[in-house]
Image 1: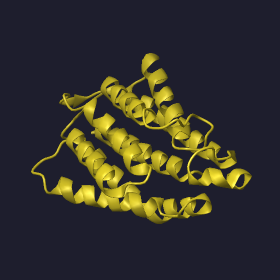
Image 2: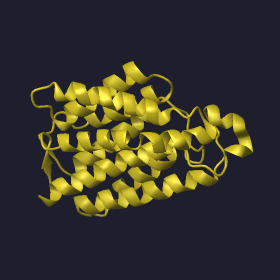
Image 3: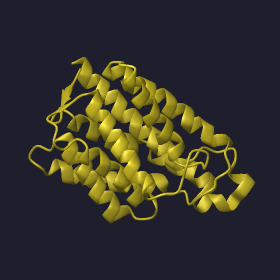
Length: 214
């Protein structure tokens, strides 16, 4: 079960479209405990990246992720720009030399994205951040590979844990970022970063499965 890096550009566009179409949803979540601009900023960055990708002759998945990384770091700023910039650069660097993407390359991509992001933040599971989605998702994918599950099952198991991780942030008290100032009042709401991370992983999963079903 594989797809080509060139075919994988569909995953990049799927991620972009998912963020753009969830702009209001993400900003609404962010408004409960933050500035309310997470969806606006993310959508802006991904829209700029989309135009840049479309201007290239034939970008691969890896190249698309690199463009997203560069744009997020240079154009959206705040804490999410560098964090997601490092995430997408990890996806790029672990796949850029591979013409074909299999479940092991995808594992390397996810692990590199997670390690890049972890180098920039002290957040850990339970702090009400995107780490509450990403950490269990990557772990579930890795375990599935170790259990010799097929590519699609690895992705589906990853998403199951990602969605549980997102839901778990509702009952957490924010430990980091602007929402941490609210203390107990930050409980009862999903974390916006966790929500956008889950949306990104869902777009990657769904489109990768489509490519594998071809």
